[in-house]
Image 1 (cartoon, one colour):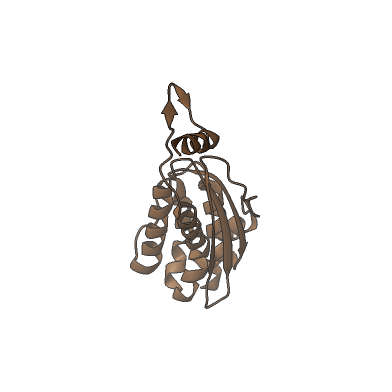
Image 2 (tube, one colour):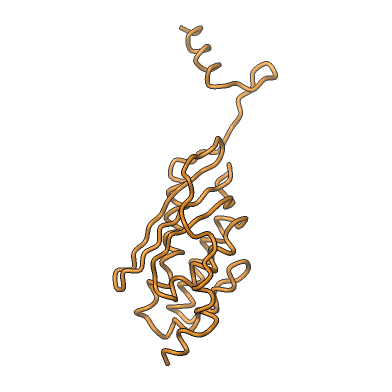
Length: 177
């Protein structure tokens, strides 16, 4: 039965993890970066994820992950790393919900860009492996939440047909007294 759990497909995914490593955390104007960390307490699997979102906080622009997990956690991280860039925050959150439902409630699993996570459906039969399988997704949700923690809708202030800079704000403050 353990051979079913560690199928050739799962081992192949685990051996090829896209976007491994960390992002350099130097946010540019209009882009939101965050880091999330998750540890599966039962087995010690760990994922640290860095994410960069667009200026609206809705789309993933860049992603990196440092994952120390069993083949199941690494396989899930590989699918995530291969599909996440260009995806929406809503798609990532939906994939996490669908993945948990697949593992714990007999759901079909993620759809769309994260559909390859269905290769891990066999893990549903091994509850002790659920947390390690979800470790990268959980860290990603934490990274998104971290990036959005202080996020505000960007705005551009214009006076007399030009865009104001922070220096302009200081000048107005001094003139106003």
